[in-house]
Image (tube, rainbow over all chains, first blue to last red; front, side, top):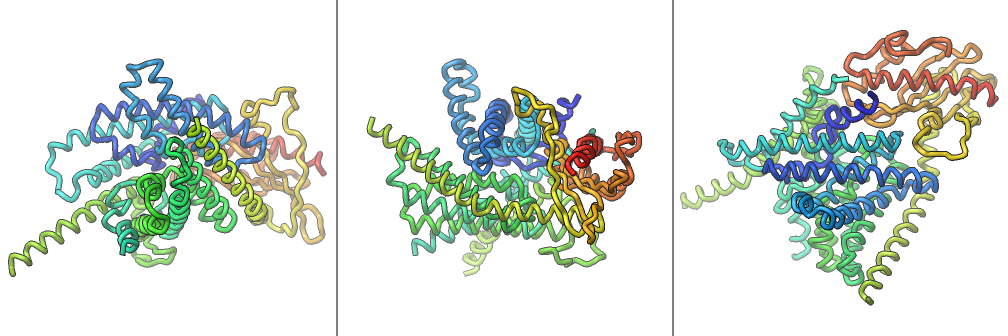
Length: 190
Length: 207
Length: 198
C-alpha cells in the first residue's frame, strides 16, 4: 500500500513535469510527434530506474559514510552521464532493435534535469532502495504521461488556425498550463 | 565592438529563454517571487561566467575525447561552490530554491555555451558571451517573476502594490500560472518583431 | 596511446583540483551552515517551549538494537527517526522541558517535526513543522495551527493516531498521517532517551 502511494505521488500528485517543473526542455522539445514522445518517455523511464538505484548506492555507501555529501552534485552528474553512455553501449550490443528505437534519445537524457532532480530528491529523503526504485518508476511514468499527452495534442494542433505569434513553443506552454490545471485535480487523491 | 556584440546578443537576439528556449526548468520553477528570480539569475550567471572563462582558458589542454566529462566536472564544481555559499549566507533563499540550485549543473545554457562558444573562442569574448547570456536569462526570470508575484500576491519584492481591494490570483503562484504566463510571454516576444516589421514596411511605403 | 594517457591525466587533474577546491569551500562554509541551523533550531525550540532561556543538547542513546550487519536504508527509518533531543532551561537553570526533532517520509520527501514536551508530566506542549516538501496549498495545511494544536497535552499513553484522537485533513491524508506517525513514534523513543540521558 505504501509503495503504491509512493508511485501515485511521484507519477500524478507531484508530477515531475507539470507540478515540479523538472524536464521541461525535452517536454517542449520532443513533444511535436506522438511516436517520438513514446520513445523518449520509455528511454527516460529506463534511465531513471537505473540511475535511482546507482545514485542511491553511491549516496548511502560512499557519500554519507565518508561525510562528503558536498560532492553530491559532481558525483551524481558524472554517474548519470557515464550511466547513459553505458546503457547506450549495452543496448547497442544486447538488443539492436531496442537500440534503434531508443538510441537517438539517450544522449539527450544526460542533460535532462528530471534525472538529476530525481537523484537529489531521493538523496534528501529517507526512502530505502526498493522505495527509491518505485519512486523512479513513478517519476518516469509521470514524465512519459505528460510528454505523450502534450505530443498527442500538438499533433492535432497542426491543423488548427493558431495566431502566428503563438505558434510553436508558446501555444505548447499554454496547453501545458491547462494540463497542469487538470493535474491539480489529483492533489486531493489521497 | 566584438565584445559588445557578444554581450548584447544574449540579452535579446539570442536570449536563452525567449529565443533559444533552453534552460526553462528554473524559469518556471523559481519565479513565484522577484527575489527568488533574481537570486536564481545571479547564481546561474556566476556559474556561467566562471565555467566559460575556465573552459576557454583550458581549451587547448582538454583533449576533445574527454571534453564533455571535463566540462561537467568543472561546471558542477562551480555549482557546488554556489550552493555551499548560498547555504551559509542566504539560508532562506537556499531553502526556497531547493533542488533547482544543484540543477544549474544540467541547465542547458551552461553546457551549451561551453560547447558552442567557450571551447572555441578567446577567453575575454567567452566571458562577455557568458555574461550576456546570464543577464539575458536573469531579466527573463525577473520579468516572469514580477508578473507572477504581482498577480499572484498583489506584491512586488514583498511590498504590497495593488492594495487590499485586489483579490490575489492564487493560480499564478502555482504550476498552471507559470506555464500559461510563460506561454503568453513567448507569444508577446514573437509579436514584437512582427509588429516592428509591419511598422517598418508601412513607413517605407509612406516615403 | 599518448592521446589516451593525456585524456586520463587531464581528467584526473581536473577531478583532483575540483575535489580540493570543494573540500576547502566546504570547510569554510560548514561551520557557518551549522551555526545557521543551530540558531534556527533555537528559535523553533522557543516557539514550542515558551519560557526557554537557554538550551542544552541531550546525548542520544542508540535507538535500535545494534546489529552485526548494519544495512543502510533497511532499518534506517527507525535508527534516524529522532535526530536530536534538546533540553530547555529557564532563568534559574531549571528544566522547562525538552524538544526533539523527529522525521517521517511524506509525499514530497522528508518531513521534520519539532516536538516540545513539558517535564515532569511529559505532555506535548506544542509541535512545529521544521521542513516539508508537501504540495503547497494541500499537504502544507499540516503547518496550520488548527492541525498542530490537536497534539497539545498528549502523552505516550494517548493513541496519537489519525482518525482517533487526531482529526484527518481531507485530501491530505498522507501528509497528516506522516506528521502523526512522526510524533507518536518519536515520542516513544525520545521520552525514555531523555530520562536515560539526564
